[in-house]
Image (cartoon, rainbow, N blue to C red; front, side, top):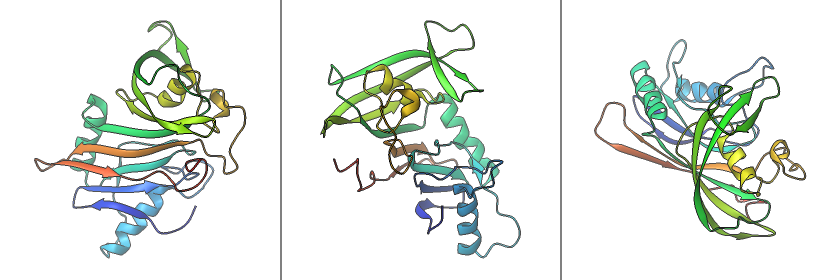
Amino acid sequence: MTGALEVLHCDNHVLACVKPVGELCVPDAGGDASLLDRARAWVKERYAKPGAVFLGVVQRLDRPVSGVVVFGRTSKGAARLAEQFRDGRARKRYLGVVVGRPEKAQGELEQWLAKDAERNQVERHSDGRRGARLARTRWRVVRPLGAGCLLELEPLTGRAHQLRVACASLGTPLLGDVKYGAPRGLPDRSIALHACSLEVDHPTRAERLCFEAPAPDTPPWRG
């Protein structure tokens, strides 16, 4: 993935930008370019920084998901941002296009989830045994969209694949998410999930930061 970095905010401690579909958040063994690589290059060029550029990773989005990602520009900033994601002070909102429509207009799901690392898939359990952790997701129907609908999703916890499993549990898997029940993939190998809003406390100032990125103006978001 190449192209100009879409920057939402940058100061001495925080960098917020938008991850496009198909890009890794951080490098992996495959050697593909990542958002972290591009963000470091942007900081280096913008501020004419010599040597290596520090950016602390405090959150991640799955490769087929797009939306807001924040990095810490200092070790202090990264540590304090990461703490907010752990203790629930960071507020995240997503939009998702799903197959079908839930029976209710809104609700909140509580599920025990455990990740099978070998299959890279999350399974639901009836309780906290077998390493399962409680996941809480708030959701509401925004509007009908084609044969499905647009959902707003707010993860109140931060579990792997939490929103993908939540949508499947409602009987409305995310478009393109064949791993969790969608009938077919999307042409760009994405899933119709977008991190549209992120709120965090600034790590060094008494200020609440809100970063927003609209969903892509392309199918299936346009219907």
